[in-house]
Amino acid sequence: MSAISISNLNSSSFLLTGFPGLEAYYLWLSIPFSSVYAMVFLGNCMVLHVIRTESSLHQPMFYFLAMLALTDLCVGMSTVHTVLGILWGFIQEISLDSCIAQSYFIHGLSFMESSVLLAMAFDRYIAICNPLRYSSILTNDKIMKIGMVILCRSFLLIPPVIIRLKFLSYCRPHVLSHSFCLQQDVIRIACSDIRFNSFYGLFLVVSTLLLDAVLIIISYVMILRAVLAIASQEERLKSLQTCVSHICAVLVFYIPIIGLTMVHRFGKHLSPLVHVLMGNIYIIFPPLMNPIIYSIKTQQIRKRVQKLFY
Image (tube, rainbow, N blue to C red):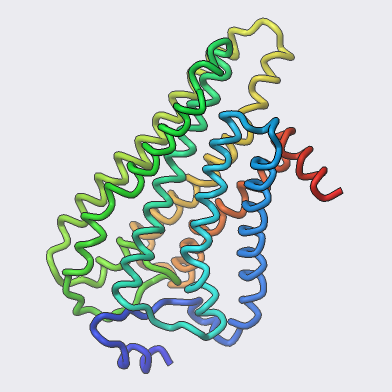
């Protein structure tokens, strides 16, 4: 079936990879994947609804959480049509233009989530290290400016590397290794000079994901120093508990990225199924887990969610 599909592809289309070796079980696999995507949409919409309707949650911390939930919602929307389309048998290939658009949104939203997590780390740093000036530093106006900077940083730096995909020639088999388009996956099958994409892509990763991770670590080192200076152990625990949700969100975001990078870099001998699974974990896991983490670990959100259901 794959050979037939590959031979029928035109020069501007790519074959998406579902789950190699599990084609006979696609209908059954579609059930858990549909459930996961439904949980992603419902969970993040619930968080947005609770923050919007509860005036007591109109605070900087929850504004940043709303940005995170909105980003996660968009991540799910950017991939659901190809992932479920393959499992339901509606989609086997994707045009170059659609692939470029999907790649742009996936990478842009990934950078945006990293930036929002950094902003949330800054929020926790101000709240713990400079609590008396918290409301004067993080005003609504400044939060709007931070949001605009995050948006510009996430989506205005990517076009040079994404647009260039349109002008590359692809002479190798047009088979992608995931159920969606990633820039590093597309250039793998290009025959043109890809040095610009490689170097500029590395620059983007270093200047966004890696820089954000380093700044988040630095902020928590400073938070830890401030917390250890508190005399009361009870107050120490209370201060640290406000950071638990954010730390979990950071781990949920960065661990799949590291795993996918390792698989792409060192896992060429691994089964294609491993690549597909890591790609789907990278896309689906953070949007699925973040609403659960904040609903369980954040008291204000948990109470409003319980109130919503009961």
